[in-house]
Image 1: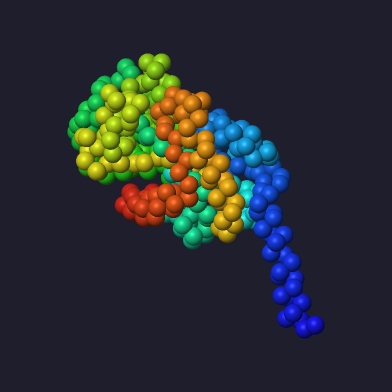
Image 2: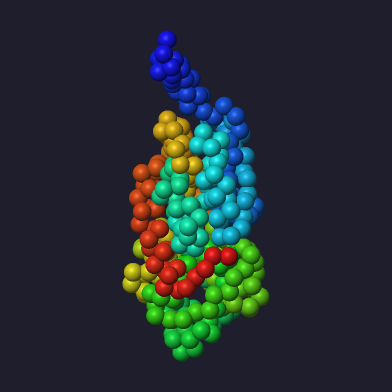
Length: 320
């Protein structure tokens, strides 16, 4: 038997084994890496999903929080993981801004990752103190034009999706705002309540509890149209045409994850979309479950990565 024949026989023997391994996935616990700290909004949703996936797939989905550097630490951990389904990434729209903030580090999700599914639409909200001087988006714009670079907004870190949402708003509205970086969205909200900053751009998951408690005022959401669960809150695009800063949560995997695993995971997630319990918990946070599969996430990355590259370049933003 020649060397070529032996190699052919070995390959033929291995293919069924590989196929069986993919069909049996997951055969061991799966790490669900979240590139943000524990206790935040995406962590809350991640734990809900992890429990549902465990019940349906028969293996633990273990939350692995890897915060820091605008999400790039957690993203890199998954990019560098083996493409066997043992590590997945649950992240926000910051996934699309990482290539602009950390160029040359091999973190472009369009080439370094396998899309699995969008998880949720998470509206970004502009909020101010309830006892402050601003009652509308128009009030903020007028004050910012009268006093350039004096109004401040906080976010959960330089280069975070909320930082970029504020920078995009300033550019679209033709105003100059001062960005103040905090170590997480929760400290930024505390700073707003303490009167240290004028406003915060943050997800409805983070802001609605404070709105309902009467501590902050919700001025608008950064969506193209009004959010169904917040019909009385204007889309900021009604006042600043074209301003849309979509925030979303999504699951991705290392590049090369076998198609059968992608399909199995996407189908399992899609089956959760209409669960009344899950929809109710998402709606309470002002979010909408998507769970749409890999194609929708791939299309969104193709549009969002260059969009945030432009915003980062124009605003001169650098990653932490």
